[in-house]
Length: 330
Image 1 (tube, helix red, strand yellow):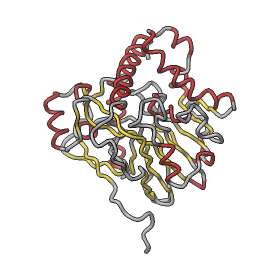
Image 2: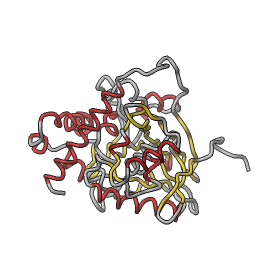
Image 3: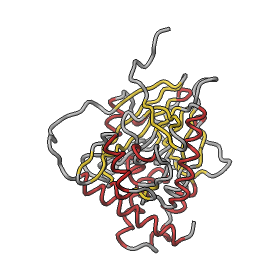
């Protein structure tokens, strides 16, 4: 990716994340209303998956590109997606995978980076009965702050003291590079600082891995390259039992679920390479639908686990998992 294109991507990402910050800090009506813990368990064969809710952000519909805005707003309305003057309510989620007795966290949420409507992953992990110190690995889909700020607590302490953090070499080379940071306008530099601060204690402890093609990965996880939202955006595939469909955790492949399933060519203003992001989305939607994969996404409505089916000539639909007991007696 050219430096000019990367600079454009970071400019857009900065504007997005700053808008999320401003929105998250606005108390809403009924702010004394308390929801149950954002935890949901699902068995995928022998693989136990726990969805962890981090909170909500608000994305303006106008940030959708390559689609008529009136049509997109119509689809959002028809799907009854909560909408405020600030934008469309959008969940932020992380996932705990438990393959072969290991505890693997995929993304870490926001911690204290973006205000009180976010930063709930650590508390929800504890509500699920898991101690943060028992997590073995944290697999990052990419290096945006809403996915890695939660490597630290809201007080700036290491959240997962015994975990190794894994990030694609492409994202690490961009977001953790001091020279690149120095070339960026001042308003953009906090994003680099957030990424570097989040991973710094893990690097110091020798528990940070920037992986590339062919590198061995932990806990049987398989990388599925899905670039476009960021240069090194990575989805993660986990296999449960032989003969069972695997689960794909696809990070930020979809932001506006009511629109981008129906029209995968609808892009997002803040993707670093919109054409590449569309190609990744089309490829993963097709594979998930045709192969019956379980899917989990960072910005799908909680509990954010389900399947994808084909609908129409080139569209798809989201099929959420049906709530049920973690185990069903034969």
